[in-house]
Image 1 (cartoon, rainbow, N blue to C red):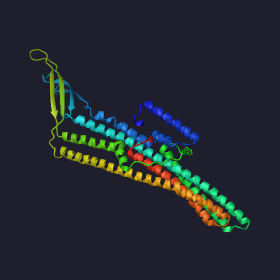
Image 2 (image 1 turned 45 degrees about the vertical axis):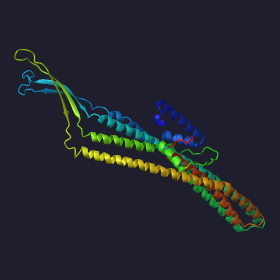
Image 3 (image 1 turned 90 degrees about the horizontal axis):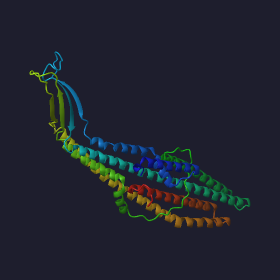
Image 4 (image 1 turned 180 degrees about the horizontal axis):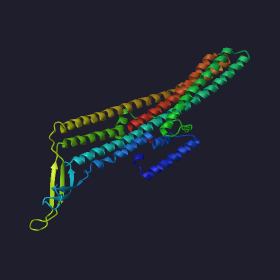
Length: 429
């Protein structure tokens, strides 16, 4: 993951992704892994989450360290009538230091709570990477569908043009009807209108993919040709959910938040115990004693502590607050598990639905409709089939082909959602 790379490693990855982008611009084609890598490298929203995690990683050592000692300089017992440092025996120049020491265990609890919070921020980076990779994959597969749908519509236009030629030939020799010519032209115009709509949808989806990759949208996004993927049978929802319990960063983030609240609750309970301040000062005296000897210097040491006299209004209320916050974190973890189970079940159900639709369309409906169209075309040429029935059947074939590409795309998008729900960033499995 990019978050764990050293600076030289990040530079190398940036260089590789830059070359991929340049190559993509030159060839105007992108594989699905290329667009995912580009998005993970350059997306500003992901970079923002990463920067937040890096900032949080610097906090545990700060809150776990003692507060800075205080150095002080005093002029004690200075006579205000003369301001003479040797006039009075108790006059002295003091130099000292004080250090605040919290009750044992407080610093460790504070540092551990912040460390767990920082780990949760790093989990948030992993979660953001998952969601970004999921969105990129879904956008890529939606472009895949739109490209295939456009190609299907264009192919259907060619078929309708061939129908128009057949109708016109029959009309010229007196066997056809003018309404058949007009009907063919109307259906052809309808296909042109559908092409315009699909092209608009593709342009919109390409702009979305450009935004996810964080690259300017002036270059055309063309997908790298791929073999038509086979939709294999997947494990049941419970098996995927058990994987998610181990791998999903969202759950790790919620667990770290709960553990951090445990430490903060323990810290609030320790707030009932006082903190100490150690003080030490060295007093320099001038002048001589009555017997003529030099006055000796003074050493002052002491300790002070705060008194939690208002415990019922402050410390007890803080304990109640942290207890409620811990319950909130507990419920958030439970809710995340419920949400992930729902994500897994819905994604798997959508995948299986698309898989079944692909199977029915590819193995049954489309071949049967193709045979029907071929038979009707032959029948129309010998006046055994009316032209309207032929055109309607051809349109149905076109719609079935588009439905096939849509079902395939939706199944792959559901697979992307399923992998993200489980916690798989790159589909190498």
